[in-house]
Image 1 (spheres, one colour):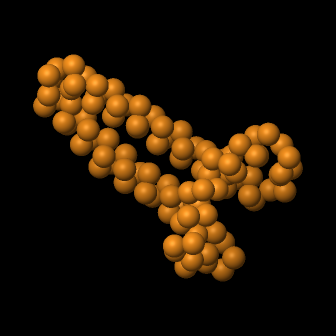
Image 2 (cartoon, rainbow, N blue to C red):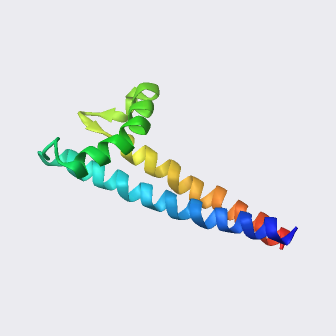
Length: 100
């Protein structure tokens, strides 16, 4: 059973890393939206491809996040990610320590 505990612990670490990486991708996407970035730049295209599905989904369901022409959906996504990091990752780590 200890192998499963180590697996869950590793999964928690990878999930924590991926959530932090996605926060930085969201921040990068917000920064490029403030400047007139070239839409054909590969970095800009990558940031839009990886964030637009989440941001568009949230914009459809919560249209009130557009406050005075300012799009607050990146802030909402980051808040959800921080919640997941504070709840899901420690829960997985606790579960893993109980199995080891």
